[in-house]
Image (cartoon, rainbow, N blue to C red; front, side):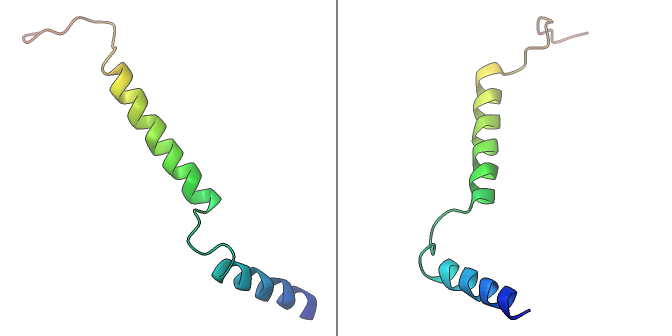
Length: 56
């Protein structure tokens, strides 16, 4: 297990130094999903196919 311990230690060292402050791939994909959802809702709005009526 020494080999795998070395890999984990290397990952932690890189995460603490070289990649510190950078956005992770998971955070980036979540941010892009939020931004695309917001843009789609703002662009399309309510397109249900029916005209809006106050009284039904």
